[in-house]
Image (tube, rainbow, N blue to C red; front, side):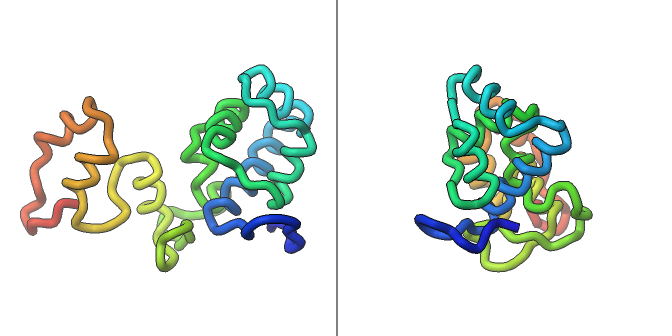
Length: 153
């Protein structure tokens, strides 16, 4: 769990906490020291000094989008893997929290949304396809047949 003694800014929400804890978990599982991750980030052109990484891991520094992508590359995972709450210990039907969503939701739904496999909100598949997917994937969905009950999920 992140440190309760945040020094600046707003406390991390559920998604920030997921990113923080996943960075720690993956880095440690790869037996990569903070200095090693810092060196990889330097090589990728997105330098974060070891102190900055320690602050990220402690929850006292936020990860911006460019940091998230570079850290995912440096750790050899997808950005979705860093965003997925409790990725190492959940089952598909466990409830997890994401920033901006009003209540816990099943891990399967969150993972599907993070990986662009399905919308988070039921009944919004058409809008999701139109706005969240690249053209080549939208073309694949253009032939999708709506289920017999009229539900598009």
